[in-house]
Image 1 (tube, helix red, strand yellow):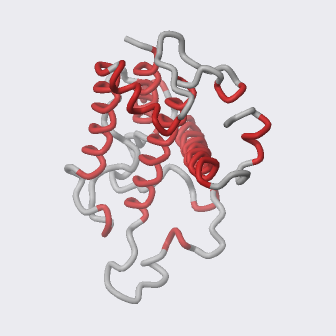
Image 2 (cartoon, rainbow, N blue to C red):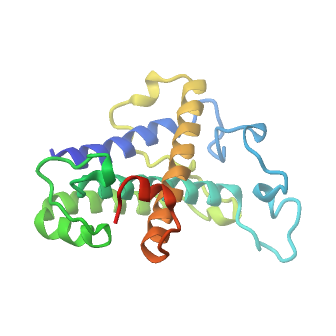
Length: 209
């Protein structure tokens, strides 16, 4: 299987294990992170518990956490796709040999889909699984009544979870969320760079055009 599909598959399999809760944990555990592990001076993470003008006005933390993890993974995949199809790698030289080359990253997905339809279909399938697991059968996560552990797509077919302690699972889960946030910011910066000249000075240092 080609490198990009392996990268995408590994990200889903690894993250499934990282966010699989320990056996003794409740199925309603919203996150393996403790309240003291993140900065939230405005207590936005508990809106609806500390303030709720109208019933069910704010989503439960399960819903928010699932959305963040899912979109972080999609952004990491998108960021990988940009480097995989750009021969110069914006000065970093990260193009994957054998993959199509497209200097305009905004058109790279269409080029990739037309030249590597099988690879594109496989990646699209992984995304569909992630979306389906996110909203398909877990119940009403918006109101905190779902059964799904945020981030767990049920893809631990290699049994990676069994090789990790609860502490390691929590650490890898935190690492993935941090990298996902960075990827979301990176993709946002790419759109800003494309639409507002000079908005991302760092890209000028890489020689991006």
